[in-house]
Image (cartoon, rainbow, N blue to C red):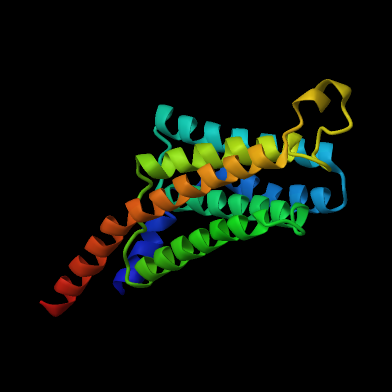
Length: 211
């Protein structure tokens, strides 16, 4: 059995856990809130997005507290994060299609595609993707916090625009731009933070192959 097949078999050992099912649930939510948002059903889309974000918080806590950490979960969780983030970015690109902000938002897609390609390259060599570091976790928190706020009260057409209580809190374009730029900076700092571990694994794999 090849190293890749061994890792694949190991990946699905003890996979049937609550945290993994929460990850599956989060992935299943992506097309739902995306479709609702595109159809202009902002409140339901916003609620589902919040529920998906909360499931992301709870799956990690449950995994650690009840010793349900699995090899599949270590990969499934970041995949769910990346798919969710790309869906949110696409929603915001559609929302701000006529503005310069879409160019900044495209950077998030570039970052996530680089991460996906890097992870796929490692797995093709029988290696596991590098685990999230502090900056990676911080970037995820900043991204979800800022993007959910923007979808909720970010200018014209936001999810809570028609609710009188939230109208005084509607953000202007300057504040929205600053939030997106900060999130983008965190995202690329986290990307560069993964680079040393990625390069180290590639070098070690090459050295082992040459022996």
